[in-house]
Length: 296
Image (tube, rainbow, N blue to C red; front, side, top):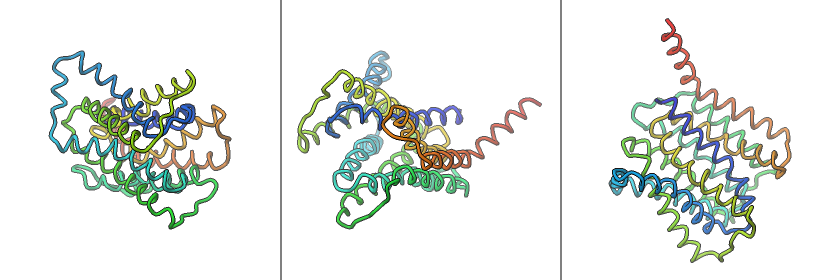
C-alpha cells in the first residue's frame, strides 16, 4: 500500500516536470489568468467523478481546517510564487521557492510515526545542489532591492511544504476534496487576474492545447496524485524526489529544442538521482527483505 501510494505521489513529480514546456508553449497568457483557466480544467475530472456517483459529493463536507489548508496550499503557493517572480529575478526567486522539498524532508520529523535519518537530509541536500546547478547556471546575485520578492519566495516554500505536511495529518480525508481546492483556486486566481492583469487569450490551437495540457496534468491530475501520495506514501522520499522535477523539466525542454545539453545538466541528473536513491534506501531494502521472506 505504502509503495503504491509513493509511486502515485511520484507521478505528480513527473507531471510537474511538464510545467515549463506547457507554460512556454501557452503563449503570453498572464499568470493569474492562466492559473484560473488551468485550475478550472483541473477540477473537471473530479467534478465528473463526483457527479457520476451520488454518494461521493458528501465527501466534500469536511471541517474548516481541511478547506483552509487546501485552499491556502494551492492558491497561496501560486499567489506567492507569482508575487515573487514579479518582484525579484526569476533565478533567485526560483531557488528560494525550491527549498520546499528540503523543508518537507526536515519537517517530516514532526509527523507521527516518521523518523528522520541522516540519509534523508543528505539526499535532499544532494537534490538541492542539483537544482542549483540547473537553475543558477548563469550565476546568482541576491540584491536587497528585491527583498519583497525574496520574502514571497520564502513564504512560497513554507506554504507548499506546510500544506504537504499538514495534508499528511488528514489521511482520512478523501482525495475527492482536491476538486474543491482546485475550484476555489480557480475563482481566487480569476479575481486576482481582474485586479492585477490585462486579459490575453491563447492565439493559436497549439497554445490552447498547451493550456489544456497544463490543466489536465501539472495543474490538474498532479495535485490529486500528490494528495494521495503524501497521505499514504513515503513522504520523505517524495520530498527528496521532488528535486527531479526541475531536472526532468530541463531535459524535456532540451528534447523539444528549448534548451541545450551541458555538463551542468548531467551533473544535476547524477546528484538528484543519487539523492533520491539515498533517501529511498530504507524503502528499497525493506521491499527486498519482504520479497525474500515471502520466497522462503
